[in-house]
Image (tube, rainbow, N blue to C red; front, side, top):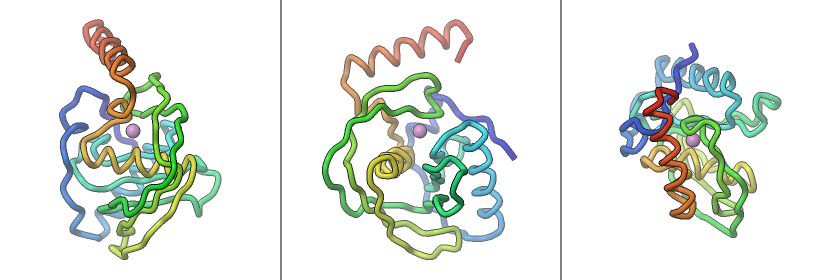
Length: 169
Ligand code: NI
């Protein structure tokens, strides 16, 4: 099932999330739906708040469906270490058509639980490091615009407000 993606401005995107406690068939269905929703939107990551659920759960696939080994389910993820810096353009399915150069660490190690509740650690560099930080941010109620300069952030917010008024958001 493909969920509608919640856009910036909805409260669920800026609230902390609740831990995943039950690793059962409902979670498997939800994760499958999140991947389906993410692929349909051509995204490389999706967090539960983006489909309206305040749950500490994200999915990532930086291969965009090309490599099944790249599929990553992150339940209750935490960042363990951060190293280096990068600053590429970043976007978000909840802020369609907006992109901004966003500083992120070059290399990140996270600890999380998989779909069965099994704990694992994962280290990512480059795009994967960026996606890990972006998706974990979502679970803490943060979006990439919180990491860009104030002027850029205000400019994006202003455009969103105009689109809301015009009924285009
Ligand atoms: Ni996002």
